[in-house]
Amino acid sequence: MKLLYIDCGMGAAGDMLTAALLELLDEGARTGFIEEFNGLGLPGIVMEAVPSVKCGVEGTRVHIKVHGVEEDEHMHDHHHAHHSHTHNGTVHTHSHNGVAEIRHIVRDHIDLPETVKEDILKVYDTIADAESKAHGVPITEVHFHEVGTMDAIADVTAVCMLIDRIKPQKILASQVNVGGGTVKCAHGILPVPAPATANILEGIPSYSGDIKSELCTPTGAALLKHFVDEFGDMPEMRVERCGYGMGAKDFERANCVKVTFGVTD
Image (cartoon, rainbow, N blue to C red):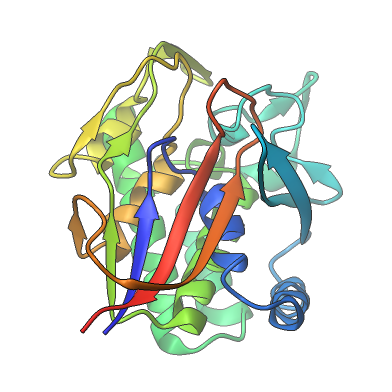
């Protein structure tokens, strides 16, 4: 059986999961994937992947630009600006897409297999539901700046496409390190995990280590919830390939999601 194991010892974020899974593809397939993704027609979205080394570990970092701006450029955190919709005082109009508009883009404007679109919409709905509950607003009023600016839908789309390409028969993951301390968002300063992340992680084994930063984002949590069959230690398998997806921040420990692809009898 083909197994995928995701190590969330440094949490999980959409861009880190994308980068880690991208590393499971060989170089030609990687370039092809990025070209295909950038040709999907997600409004204003461009992905690039660059080599990144953290604590001596070599991996890949994925940058998602929306209309030429990297959404978290002004927030020094690998937590995306999905709670912050202003950049230096200017409000980007593209970050006010409502839930219905995003569903419309995914359903009608991008050319992907129906199963992949279903995955994207389920993950997206999980994030929207969690934000709605966390902030006490009906889902119809959850604006896209509260569920991850356009880069969140980009991360979700990329991960769903990559899982479809890699086609593991079973997906396992470690317990999730959520980080600690506080996170600044559009609603003020909140404890880590942010309430939306905490909602999504219900039923998933998670813990807080000694790193005072938001390690698991709502996007990362929703992707794990949707795809992971069970959480626990890595089982015995014949490892075929490993991938390292790097986060934006630097800590004493390599800030990455590690994925292992292998075969078990």
